[in-house]
Every structure is written in C-alpha cells, then in structure tokens.
Length: 124
Image (cartoon, rainbow, N blue to C red; front, side):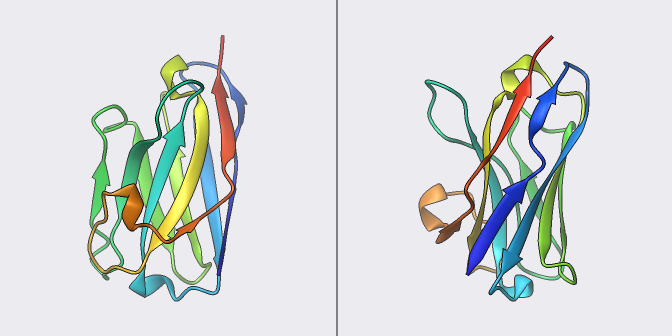
C-alpha cells in the first residue's frame, strides 16, 4: 500500500493550493484519511481528517477551519486538501496518512500508512 502526496509549492499569502494524495493498494471506503503538517522546528500538527464511512465526516483544526477543505474521490483513489487564503504560518511539509477506520481518526499514532510529504511555502 502506498500514499503519494503532491501539489506543494511556493505561493504568496492569500493564494490557494490543492494538495493531492494518490493511493494504491487501498479500498478507500474502509479507510479514514488525514492531513498533517510539520513546520521547521515545530512538532507535527494534525490539520484535517475525513472518515472512511460513506458520510464522509470531516474535521479541521482551528488554525485552518474555514480555509481548508478535505475531500476524497474513491474512484480516483485520491484524497485532496484544498487550501485557500494561505497564511505565512501555513508553511510546512504536508503529509497524508491512512488509517483502517470508518470513523474520524484524530491521533497520528493511529495512522498506519504515511505518504512522503509535500512542501508548502507561503512567502511574500
């Protein structure tokens, strides 16, 4: 099973960016997915997650709520993170992760599979 994150880049404050996480070896319906980030010198932070159930429940950290949107396309075996109104403090390496769960998974330790990370740099 593999996760391949992409879509990072250098953007200006206020810009938008969409991260993609393409999976292989998963039946997405049975997995919850999460996006995490780690900024230089800081601990890893949970950004958003989406449940594995058909209702697609979502959760966002307070720092990104209202600006980021997580979604999944089971047919394309992909999970996305749409990031709008980016701020300097959103600069980090972003990781996607998968957990065999139908419900939301908040704890990073509960994620079994991780992608390699994609760098998002917000700079003026």
